Amino acid sequence: MEKDLFSQHTNALAILTGMLEPVKLPALGQKLLADANLAPASIYFKYYLHQALVKAGMGNDYLKWLDKWRENIQMGLSTWAETSEINTTRSDCHAWGASPNIEFFRTILGIDSDGLNFSKVKIQPHLGDIKNISGKIPHPNGTLSTSYRWLQNKWEIQVDLPPKTTGTLVWKGKILPLKEGVNKFSF
Image (cartoon, rainbow, N blue to C red; front, side):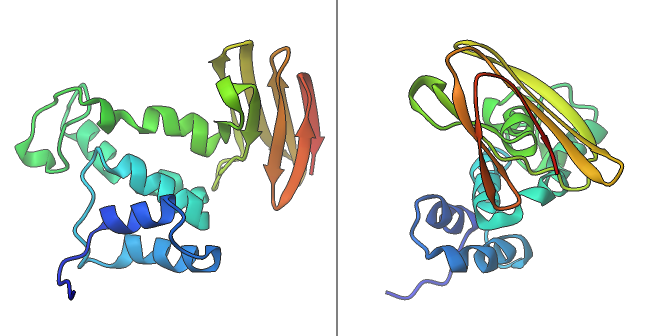
């Protein structure tokens, strides 16, 4: 059957569900951002679009994808709008529109669950041009924190895991083990 309408939605879901070979992900990610013929994702569906773009290897560009949220702020909205048509919407405090709140931690700081009940973590940051950033989140076993600093031409990274929690740090193609407590790296 021939189709004449295509969307960011369907293509993002194709990436997230593993329908494509990994080598094809970067090209589709680029197309999702560049092809004006694709029906655009609404502000709430951008949560999935951004996850797909990260999976396609484009996570370092995350901060560049936040134009709709910047428009919300410029319009003086005090909560995120429900739709992407900023000029004709109102501020409805729509939960899906608040996805940057979690993606700051998951995408930029790289904190993600990698096991049942967050028993393991995967830390895979997408810092882009950021040279100094840190953050912490509540975890079932305590507090989990990460810190990234570019000092004297090298990265100083610290990941603090709560008790009974292990995981991995994924950094520039390397997978490094993390243990409970303080984990320090210099690259």
